[in-house]
Image (cartoon, rainbow, N blue to C red):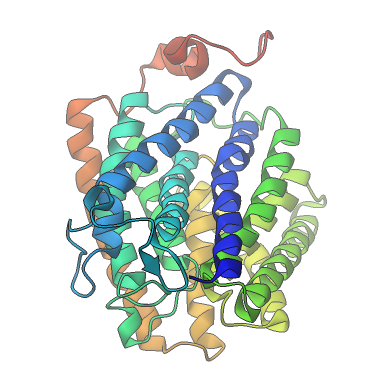
Length: 392
């Protein structure tokens, strides 16, 4: 065990959890109507709790149990055989478990953005739990599960490079968001603007800081690769923020604050798979393109495909993660066949299993709330609370 690496990953673990609680909750909560903000908080917080328990019970073992093959088995269920003396690389294995647990928390939490304001709470919990075990954990095994370090799974063995989760986190979450939004159908009122852009900005700022742990921590060591990953993460976010509002200004004659911070998230998602391999100039390129590309993806999904992915999970996270994964090959740090092959296989698996889960879970608990509940807002109707004593 290396003490510096251990302390570094301790810090990174806290930062990645911070990305979900409270950062993602605030970011998403500010984007919805005032009558639904607590329901978003409830979804994100409950998912964090449930994923933690399921990661211990089976998720970690499926992802990082027996190396090789298509799943890791259940040999490490409930951390069986893992003690305080077990080592993963240069850090305690229980710390590696905790670090990866924060990824298992935020990935299904990202999907929340697709179904806010109209989804059943029981559906959120049951779908998220099954999805993490049947989609996320197996994909982790395919990409990273052959060993402790990234790119150790069966796809990593043939050259696929995904440093911190462009495929594992962002592609899977984005495609699952598309599936749920498709089955849910649009909200009855899609024109209401974000009720609190200030919360959106605060959440995005926290996500930006937390992303240093997300990408930098994926080196699993306090070394130069981690430092470069953190640096390029920051630069890509900055470039995408500016390119997003520049494109807004060109198209619409104004630059919005919500657009600025959405660009930040697009840049962060796009640099994620490449962050351990590229330098600062490449990061600026990835971010600058991502700000325009993801904004156009938003327009495509909303206006041309007319899919109500409410908070643009597919366009920002899905498209961003896929774009960054492809850029690894474009910039010469991964093989084209390996990058595209992994994207295709994971995409088909994610969509297929997500469709099956939506249909099965909807047989057990309602997918969508009734019209009256949706009109009145989920906060008071479902959870018996309201965020503000205002008629909004």
